[in-house]
Image (tube, rainbow, N blue to C red; front, side, top):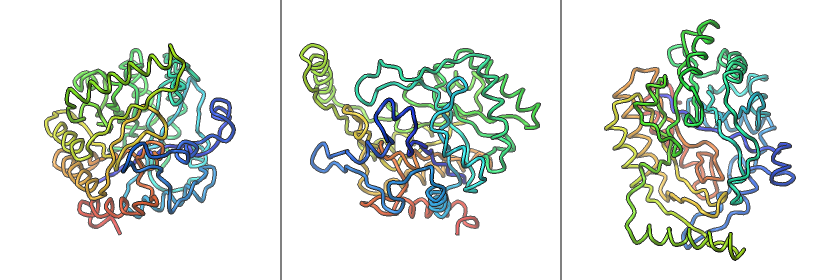
Length: 374
């Protein structure tokens, strides 16, 4: 069983964030200033064992890998930011590649969307544009091939595993995948193993995604498709708030009201697993420990999980599903995430739960890999 955790490399200052958000900005800036929005709301999330780390420090990256490995996590899926040859948030990943440390396996998820000022309500203002072209596709695969040859890079039957987050904004995506596959084969790989991330942005059906040429689909959570149905009264209240905020912002120039959607963790879990059990495609589950993007956004979605054992039930169900369906090399479950502190989705220990999520992760994985987890 290969449990792979998404990993955000945002925790170090870079020139672009200094320019766009202010000197020294990192994800910790949002995390530290967060406050509860209502009675019983768990905020802020404060890190425990790792502290407020800086990913430029090798000691921080090594500690993360040690904590993950001890919990049975197979590897990290690093977010990879490529904008027409320009890379962002790349310093920690470059250090991992050049130093050979940590030794924890890894793969990439290409976060191929334009960056906007969505965090401060100006989503229409583009900070850096993502433009796709065949010329850039060629440059990109040439940069990726040496990374794929790293002994730590996660492979499925010898095929490098690569995820694409926004398949919906890539024109001629089938041509890009064909180009990349041919180039990988000519470089000595049996093929690539490319997965489409099915996020809330994706309108294409699973049939269409597979027809584009993807080998599998990652059922990224939280997914609106798995949200429990909301009653008419609650939908009406939220619609009214949205309309009022539009008036306050654009007409009266006054502070806006906060709109919050609270989702039951248990219901999301049950809906997610039920959807996957009824799907015929090669689809890999994704589990969240919790979710809360209120540190980032005024209009937020909160899926608060007050019992880490609930997460354990979800992880167990996901592992059971892939074990029953797939061959050994495809026994893969994703977790969102290792360190999405600004979205309340982290396996890293915090002051409230300590290392409970890691302990439960180890317990569940050990049931499937009894000879591998110590």
